[in-house]
Length: 261
Image 1 (spheres, rainbow, N blue to C red):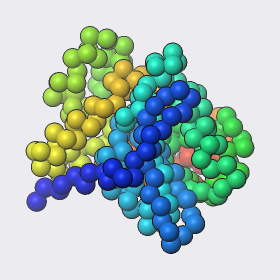
Image 2 (cartoon, one colour; image 1 turned 90 degrees about the vertical axis):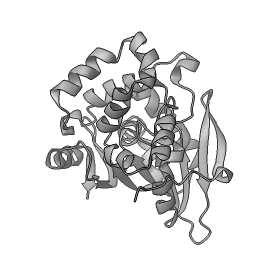
Image 3 (cartoon, helix red, strand yellow; image 1 turned 90 degrees about the horizontal axis):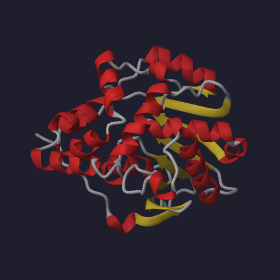
Image 4 (cartoon, rainbow, N blue to C red; image 1 turned 135 degrees about the vertical axis):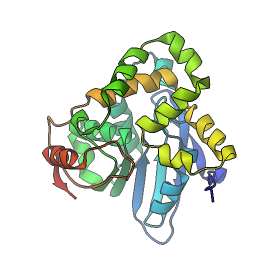
């Protein structure tokens, strides 16, 4: 039987305004504990599609989940005349942490691209580590060498990421729908849905700014966060359908993080 999407309860969604960019923030309180959790999404993500994982972590603490510029329903960096660089994303995450968790202990759950951004933020701003008790990464990498991406996909990405015409027409292209779910390890999720939810799934993925997405793929394919050590305890989870070489990734994570499970 095909799975159904559990859509996000709107009562938990609030307006987010950071550094001149408007987006959404989710917050759900857990009154049984004082533990706090921040969820940072993957590159191809949306709060509505993250409900299941956020609801899971809510059992362990009060959860805050955020959009990122050009990801989910948030405005892209182009609205403030900035480029979607890794450093600009790191500055954004640093702002969120400083505004929301000043002098408070908390745990971070970072998914895919969100983990890459978080790592760079921790490397840029040493003081961010003071209140972070644990990082849980899902499909987290610190260097692009961890990725198992075919040469054909790499060539396609290099050709298409700067073509404005391609960017205008691609949202209606069924091949690209399949390609972007594949490159982000979302095949099994999409295939498990009925047709109605598959359409909803694709529609929500397209709330991401496409130009921004293609530029962030370039970051993903060239990332190297192994240049500076972060002294925080890290638990890394690899999903079965990820495009990550687990053995290579473990060694690279241990270069960047002092304690890795």
